[in-house]
Length: 118
Image 1: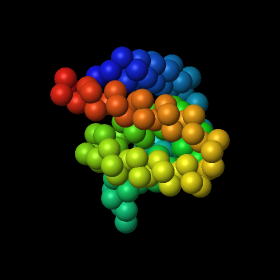
Image 2 (image 1 turned 90 degrees about the horizontal axis):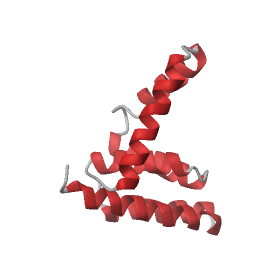
Image 3 (image 1 turned 90 degrees about the vertical axis):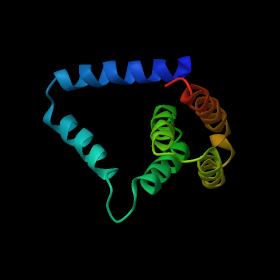
Image 4 (image 1 turned 135 degrees about the vertical axis):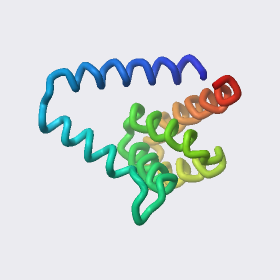
């Protein structure tokens, strides 16, 4: 995996562990709700991840975009599918999304480059 992917995963894991150590019931419930929201249901996981990706891009949350890109990659979505969704996000969010689009492409390229190294 590319260094930016490993750095993101390591940081996310480390900080999630730190957050959970506080044993805050509200935060634990929010984390659980988030996890359960992306489980298979009326919509399949791939569709839910694309929806999360688009919403994250429109909201301009780079960490969320990276999380959903990695999830899309793990679910086997193609670059064409993911970038079409990012195109919709850019259309909906406007040109202010473009810097996040650049970072998304960079992160997706790192995921793709690391796919053969897993």
